[in-house]
Image 1 (cartoon, one colour):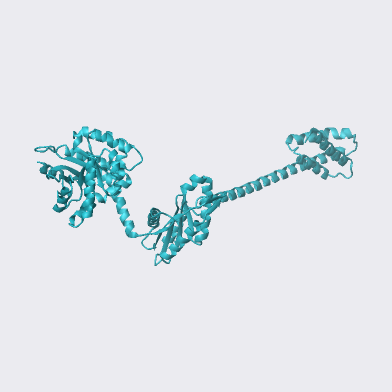
Image 2: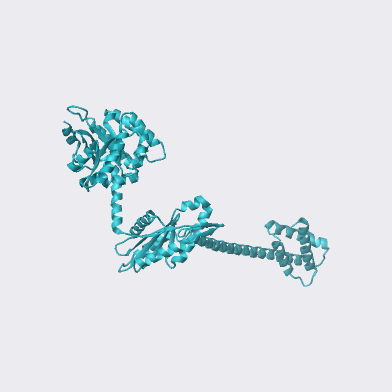
Length: 550
């Protein structure tokens, strides 16, 4: 209250007390009322009560000029009523405040508990559902999949459709991530409707999975996959853009007995990969035999680095023989793998894997180094010892630093450059970049021989060879194989043309896959320079080659 408001209140209470002193009979309730109003106005300290009593007792009778025999008794009783009312009012106010505090605490506690429950509930639309699409997330899907697999198996079956949007990065790159997200939301909504009542979850990114519980067979799950693909086939309109997406689906369906959630997800993931590699926009069905082969390939691929560390790889050498005088011109280094469980493996078992994974670079580097190390010790009784020919993979040729690596290897081993031949495939050179050609020219300038391997199976572009630092063509065995039949003149004419054109470019020609004397004679007759194949010798260890040289 302002000072004026306070004065007005106190004046009114004083008037009430004065009227009570004059009135007959004395109404003590006035004292209670005055006390209530004082406490209600927050004039509630002990000092306020003392001052009130003091002012009333000392001033009121005198100022009112009240004279009677019982005036002091009336004043005492009125002051007692004020004091009593004051104490009661303070007590009641304290109790009310305590009750208000208690109620406020209860209300705050209830609100806090409600907020906690709401927060926990939100933590659970966040822990088990995807925030973008509102679909179940990986956590909830894993729980449902585990529940579908656990328990008495009996004859129960279960199926999965692992779905991934094809080339969704193009959508983000073309329209932006915001439109990409909205397209995913629309796709999720369509999927949910198309496969209802089956559970569809988002695993992250543009990957979704549909759980088919209690499947009655493969047909059930295939139908779900086709419904999902059909739902995604129509364009989605987002901010005026027609966003078209396709998807690939990997399908796995099997008995619950003997499987696990991890097995199902791994199988579905492998099958999705098959659908992707087949071109996408379709589904693939799990094939246990194919999966087994691919797992074996993966295991073999993973074992290559370990095999290199343990010295499991070794080289055999196959002679490259002159068709004119039968002399040994060179040998081709062929890598073998003495696998601890699978025995000796030929290159066709692991070279493809090494090229796919990039392990061909360390493996090819080891082959090159080992071939140079062994060849440097070969000496002939007379004449020049044979050169060693080593295949270079595409990744090796296109790898920066190849020239420096070969130069350092020759310096370290002491092998003369003219006793090293590097074989490359035609596809290695069919590139728009100049770096591989520049590297081969630098190697040729060192005196190293450069050969094109399996010529005739690729572009067979002799004109292109004019600009390459090539010294030799190795004609593919497919052409030589036709020379086994006396009446097969077409292959002979093709080979004769190749030899003639190669000689016009100052290239020597080696025929691969020579298995009979008849083939060797016909090759000699058309002017082929050298031959390689079982007729001249099978691949053998270095000591056999050394014995032949001596």
